[in-house]
Image (cartoon, rainbow over all chains, first blue to last red; front, side, top):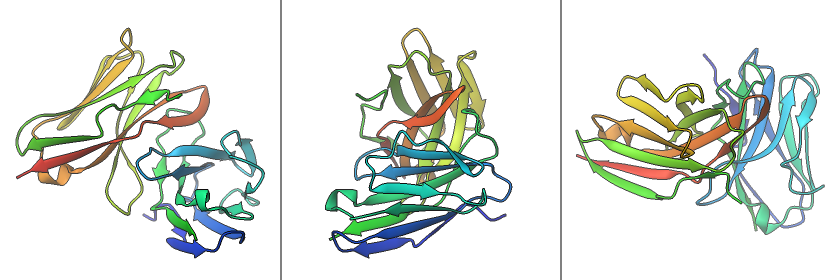
Length: 115
Length: 112
């Protein structure tokens, strides 16, 4: 069956520009997560949705980062006024439930490069 | 402060031998632990998990051991195969309170 799909797979943008990263979760999965992975690091939590609402956005680094999931399925991560330090692989994951012991299914990520 | 630590960035093992990947955690509220495997240009994939009420969970060639008193877990792969070469992430969670917290990963190379 279809897994988690993330588009684009690669995005190069100039410093100061706005970017949107899209995630299509596995059908029927109510929980959706965004993580960011920098070189040599493990995935770092950004935000978690249960249905349409952001249940936990404590990982968003600052107010330039915002995410939405208006219909409880597709999610978009939005980054304003991008900085070079935002360069990373942005990973989306979904799970059947939001409980911590429900394994996450990850997409292949979007590699963002800010020049 | 890293709540989940994988102190070995890399490990090299001969094919057929046992691979042992280690992980330490600091948060005593964690009650569920998972291992994920990641190939280049792909997202992490779930491998095996263990609840804090157990000390061992086995799935084929993969076994995870948990030592709660030492706040330590390990993943054993036996026998190791070249296809096991990947980055392995340890992750932990307080099941009543997401999100999953990951370590930095250990790159395993299985040499034929």
